[in-house]
Amino acid sequence: MTTPVVPVTAGTPTGDVPADGAVLGKISYRIPVIYAVLVVFALLGLVGTLLRREGVWSQTTEFQSRYGDQWFTIPNFSVPSLLTIIVLTVLITGATGYAYVLTAARRTIPVWLHIAVGLAFVAAFLTWAGAGKTSVIPVTSLLAGALALSVPLIFGAMSGVVCERSGVINIAIEGQLLFGAFAAAVVASLATQPYLGLVAAPIAGAMVGALLAWFAVKYQVNQIIIGVVLNTLILGLTSFFFSTLLADNRETWNARQPLGVIEIPLLSQIPIIGPVLFRQSILVYLMYAAVIILQIMLFRSRWGLRTRAVGEHPKAADTVGIQVNKRRVWNTILGGAIAGLGGAFFTVGSGLAFGREMSAGNGFIALAAMILGKWNPTGALVAALLFGFSKNLGNVLGTIGSPMPSQILAMLPYVITIFAVAGLVGRVRPPASNGVPYSK
Image 1 (cartoon, rainbow, N blue to C red):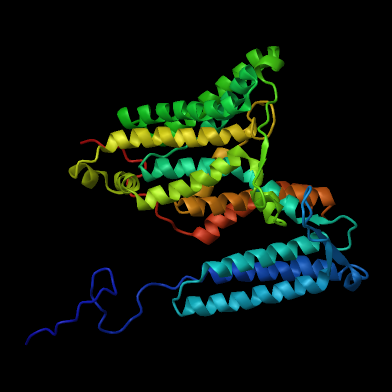
Image 2: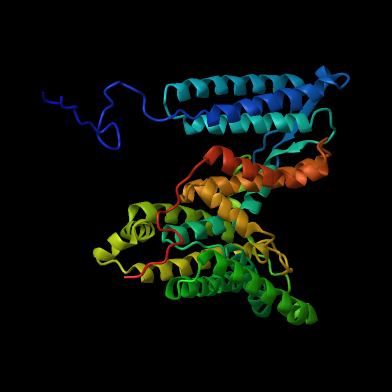
């Protein structure tokens, strides 16, 4: 008796179709559950607390979009606080049901639904924070501050993408940011020219990247350990020079040399978007270019193909003539230069003098943004903007006198980052040979 042949299709990894018609894979309801948690928080935390106030139905929240001098501005507008929150909560509830239906049908939840739910929840939260207060919610200022706080995170995340796509774990982003800030401040002060500091910053970051590549590739030292050691080394060096050289003569070695603001004609006059995106320093415009160029080069060029090859399967790359270790070394140096450029934002980019430990853990948050973005430049950009927005949101709410405790506001960006990485991303797969030394 012969065994019947099962037709081979591309529906499963092995090409076999189960004879009993069983559904392959387990359905994950992670996204609908996250949406449902937001609904519960909106009902209990926002609507519930407002209902306890007297005269809640007459309370309003005022929003402001004006930011500096503009040809055309949107006047301040007020919305009924409780009614607005209820409407937005209903919209999030509907999105939760739609996400559940899509998940049950094994269909992909569209990106626009994530954006819509996020915007609705943020709008509801801001409406709650400003309910019944005389102060206004500065929308444009909130977004502009969020972008500013995101700049070093975005550069750090791009550095991580370049290095880890090549197979080298870059824990030293924190040190590269700090050393870039130090070099930018010192060179700009000595030359009394902030743009020279902008040139010195990526060189300083590249030097740290070169040390990382030397130990990780040539001597095959554990990459996480050497990254931590480099962070400690840079922290010690910059603290020593800050306490001695920079402190003795601040005007010469550590003076404020801010980069000027460059306004893009016409675009900078667009309400809300214009001041946020097109009224910035040259460093922010370089950030735009870095993300766009890296996204194109990584997935649409020979360099990107070979970079991803040495990070995924270095042995196969070696067999077709790609010099694996050489490419890892140069890409790690490039990643260090990108992070160093981001460090310049702490000093010349913000018009500040150098301060001890002024990177303040941004390098590690940049690593989290890279993971949240799944080692993709665009995804890392969005993740970094999420952290910057949550951090500036805490600052703005503290300014307008939010009912939320100040301790909660301080921990808000870190809580959002943890929940974003654990909840939205779930299990992610880094490049297969990330952190694995290669020998011929």
